[in-house]
Image (cartoon, rainbow, N blue to C red):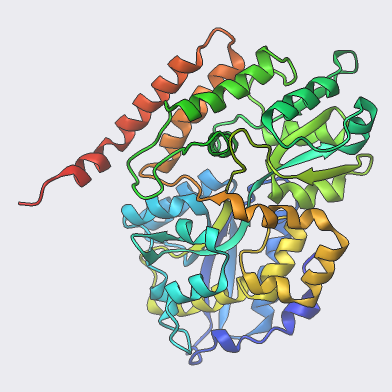
Length: 437
């Protein structure tokens, strides 16, 4: 929970600059991507910031999920009302930079008292796996705010009843455990994983592709995805087999709310979800004794970075840039960012958060909060490409087909997804393929 005594005691010296002629109001858009009281908590954070100083008034605007937040921010820019700061899905940075919608972070950091560059601030203060999704062509366009990896939640009581002694570490062990946990008479499923087209399905699927030894996309080129590669088809097949071959997961598209509800009612033994759900799970698991573990591997341990970063859109005034810098450095200060991590379940991307007494005590008292952080040694960047949302949804639609229709072949679904993605990325592919006259 947000600690007002801690936050109001934070020195804002690092964010200080010449006094404003008058209080500057800025718009701050923020999503609520997973279950929980995120909106109420962020409202508190904004209120505490506004009360802690006299120069800036932040107007918080709740914008729904990640995809909706992107659409609303872009619409505000087109209407001449660009938000000064937005918590944006970390994998949209590249797309927004390509389309010239956001400014390099140096537009804000030029107002830092010590004149530190955004690149230096990012690279010195944040975990290395977050850097790739914050930059485009070596330029920092985003500052990480909260981050995640997918983790495995498992019901300890159901494990004990099924005679399972430890969390599965491989896909084969996962299937075996899920079979033992499935009980049709009780309406109990062995496993559930998201398969929606609102980013959750693609995120989990991409993690499985990497765990299968492959890549979901080219991390260095925004016009290339590998949807019909052997490793991607293997991940799709794994999803499909859980439903139709092993019969340990219900057919049809599953969203995170369904999955969470099933887990919290002792009707699902294993779920793969974001560590960002940990706060909600911890608060609501009244009758569920659960623990968390690494994502199981096929060929290798691998996870995908998730979460969100702070970006600034083009079209704001210099006064708004100064105000946005002050609020940004407040949000990612070790104390505030650590407090948000403890509330939400996301891990803090700011390394110094884990040096604070509050975070040390929290990690010591609640070890599951460290699982996602421990997985960073196996982390890969989140998929980020030209037209990220529709390109991602091309593969998510393929996923929805194979978990809903037993007759739909993985081969056809993957090839169709690849064809659609290539059509969407063609303008970028053509542009980058042009020769120089």
